[in-house]
Length: 247
DNA sequence: AAGTAAAACAACCGCAAGGGG
DNA sequence: TCCCCTTGCGGTTGTTTTACT
Image 1 (cartoon, rainbow, N blue to C red):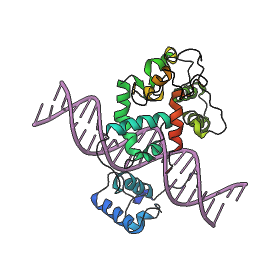
Image 2 (cartoon, rainbow, N blue to C red):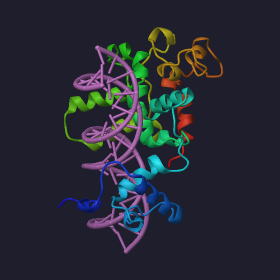
Image 3 (spheres, rainbow, N blue to C red):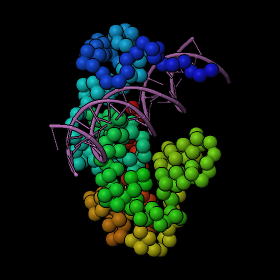
Image 4 (spheres, protein in one colour):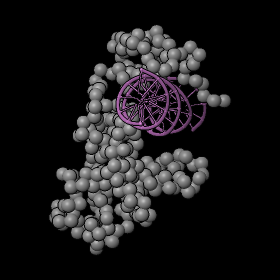
């Protein structure tokens, strides 16, 4: 027994929306507000399924949407957030007013991935490509999860998914203790090739670069007593993440 | 101008989480 | 506590547009 379909497929339109359908949907939501997507199509006189209406509204018709090209600032913000959150497009979208998760996802796949690759950065791990390929011992959030999936080949999809989530968003996991990858604490950061959040995002020497700070021995970071505290930029990243609002 | 490839965008599908009965 | 329903999310596919030969 499968679940019942979300709608009567035989009597629903699919594909591109017409102007008339858009108008109907807008008019209905203006009059009644969002919500009750399942019953909305019938009430609004649309031959669409509720999911389709919701998607159309959220991704295209919402009045607060900011259409047009992404700015350089938005680009960098998306990269940072993706580094932090992984493919949590809705969370990323929550930090970009007027942008939708779908829009950001598409933009990532068509523009930013290539941009990072051009910078020599693996878009999945946000680490330099050659380093990711060579350094098998260093933890790489996304890459390690993928490797684990490939290795195991077992159907424990959920387990794997949660592993990925835990590793990418350590702050969410209240059980695990987060440990930075092994790193000789006496060795200067430069020598080990570890990068701060900014550098791993391709923003070498940018204003967010903490490598520089670490390397000149900033006392504010307490780097001598807490090496690795700035692990992949999580010092700032965690703070950022905690301020995120869920939709 | 026509054909083809690549890029960009919109929409669909399946799954999971959360809430209510 | 369990089951069902609704909603939301992320991955993927399909279609349209643009660039190139």
